[in-house]
Length: 117
Image (cartoon, rainbow, N blue to C red; front, side, top):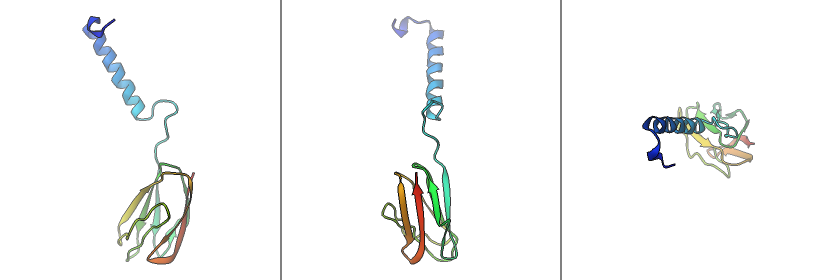
């Protein structure tokens, strides 16, 4: 039956039900929805990455925070922050599984590993 044949109140209720259902889907209310991304932090301090090994999931974000008084980078085959100034941060969203060894190109003795499951 065409919607124009429905009483106005029924059309309004159907529209409200549709909007509520779509809103539930957009916030992950449906079964099988992907879990929300989790933020993680790596601190750059005393010329070291802390933690030296971090395990995260695909889609998570990792924030590198530089707490040293000079710039650092977080550089791997998959990402490159470029110089992160003292007191600044840089964020990366993980895209695929794997183990990513990374370094600070300005201080090559700074090494760490990002494990993405």
